[in-house]
Image (tube, rainbow, N blue to C red; front, side, top):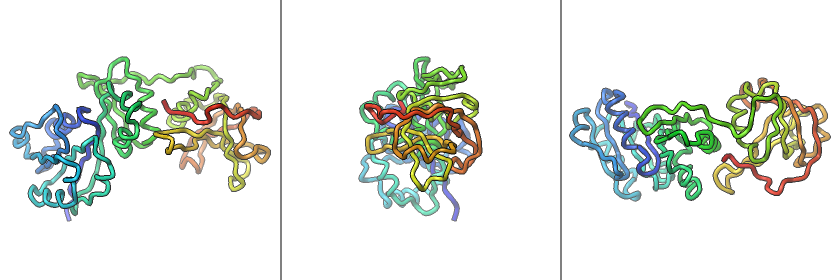
Length: 313
């Protein structure tokens, strides 16, 4: 059976989904792939010009209510339109479980998921509707922040996305459609050979070090850590890290780097320490490739902080 590619577009209303679909279909040559069906699950400010779409062999099918988005609806759409490719513009206020639990017609395969985000409102949504907006971005292959300007905190945006979705490619666009290629600023100085990482910066440093380990190779880092050192762990290895909240209090995970230390059996599991260590980039099975490995210079007992969690923003 012929595979019918489905391109999934998620994001809140007026985040640019419709504009992106029109650009993809008309400007990027996707119309040459055959008959296109756009399934639109919300009616935003930007509209489709059905006459223009007919010229590129594309049709629009509206879905007004979440309860109408069913297996039967999609099966009927497939039989009625016989598309060669599908663009699914999903409603940003609908639960993603509705989509994930719906059975696609035979042959339909989601080949790419793109999420659009209005950079001018992202922080507001993070503060007030974090779980809902992050659900939209959780499985996206590409996250596009549009309407960026010189005040956009690209580093903060990236950290929030990567904390939930490590595989996502992140793109920043300005209001005029050009790419925003400014470098992302870190909240700490890495120009020297020694870094004193605060609790507030730990999660940010962890994410950047995981993604760009060579940037930190040979540097010494000092930070307050909770020890992960259960009996089952390999001898000579422990993990000094922190529990981080990624989305909500129910979504807390331990993040830390592999640390090689011959006297690790003297470091109690779940104890608090202040560690100073040299970062080396080595192959590690835990990373499935090369990554940052710590070699302690000093380890001192420490008291637990008032807030034991660290955050990505």
